[in-house]
Length: 238
Ligand code: ADP
Ligand code: MG
Image 1 (cartoon, rainbow, N blue to C red):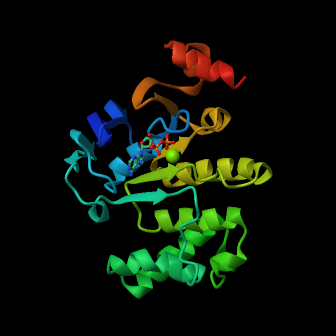
Image 2: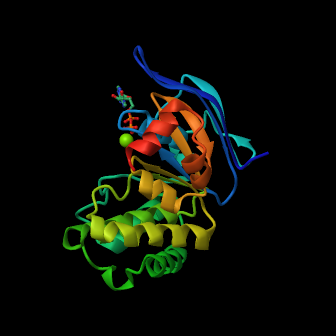
């Protein structure tokens, strides 16, 4: 059995079938990108996995447990969005302690965990700063720190770098991958950027119009696209 088992997942908004029969298995510690054009359903799929969105059909097993009906708060899944979603009126430290306080984690353990994740994302000297005084890249590192401080089973990243300028994006791509490997945390990374997916992923899941076109390693997708869409999507960006 795989760490994540998504079977026949379906999601519609009114008559708009946004996800059609999505089946995907992911192993513990894997980094999988969801790649595809704007509007193909990437964010919706992540939101369904996180529990922020209900599904119309299918099942989701996580670490051997059926979490299809489990509410978002207790799924133990961390998420980072494209737009910085930090609390602007709280310091970096307070942004990180907030989810831990909700989980009733003791102040002394909070301190230990927060110091640890700040070290991992390289922002130890910013713990008293407010988000507004940080660069976009630093804010996303705080958002990442906040997602991992709860020690989630899975990390879901929805285009976390698309609002970051190109110069910094490369560094952050490498940094996210380093952190993910260091913590061995199973990660799904959404992007519409083929190069980003190619660079970062163990495997790529290519989506089009709510359907999976291909799931394979970057090199396989590149050299052996299985569908006409896959071939043209990959070709289009070269
Ligand atoms: P992507 O992230 O790949 O760009 P989305 O998952 O955001 O795509 O959107 C997929 C489709 O679902 C689009 O047609 C979008 O308009 C629709 N959609 C997404 N969220 C909602 C919602 N809350 N209500 C209605 N339609 C939605
Ligand atoms: Mg999206």
